[in-house]
Amino acid sequence: MQTNILKSSDVTSIYLIYTENYSRKKYSARIRFLDTKECYLSTEVPANFTKPKKKQDAEIVAYTEDGVYRAQVKIMETTYNGMELMYITELPSNWKYTQLRQSTRKKVKGDVKITFNDGYSITAETYDISLGGASFYMETEIPDLYKKISGIITVDLPSNSYANINSTVIKTETKFLRMHSNKNNTGDSRYVFKFLGLSDSNYMQLKNYLIRLM
Image (cartoon, rainbow, N blue to C red):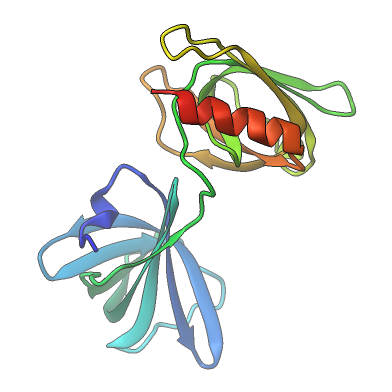
């Protein structure tokens, strides 16, 4: 398994996890520096923070678009500069990978619309799609309310004469999954919505569409 996963642009979020005084600590972290021996992670200062012991066992968890990478490390030192905590750990290696995506995701530009019970709607163009869901870029941020409730998604996938694929329309319940911090060239954020209760006919229709794409 690669040892430089933390340098990858596919990483969407990183967490540092350790147990102190029988309490499990989990902090969202940012990479500050990596060299051949050490990793520097910064986090916000939590309430009632207790400095971990040197050589405290810990786990670094890195989420990517496709799955989760986990590596065991030791916390060598922890410092506080008045604004944030800095954890110095061993350089993670021997990553263990867990796949989250249920199928191959392919880049497809198709019209997508998500509607909610109160009339609010989202209209965009798909960036990619899989049997599990679809992603798209948005210039404006989706309100938090619509990240918590489900809606109805309609995806109109284009025909492809080269691959002899007819247009495909997928309609099912959907719910917000995550937003990627890495943005495109125009500064838009990428949102991922998962499919809920995809019907058997829509499932086979979408599967056949993805299989035949080059």
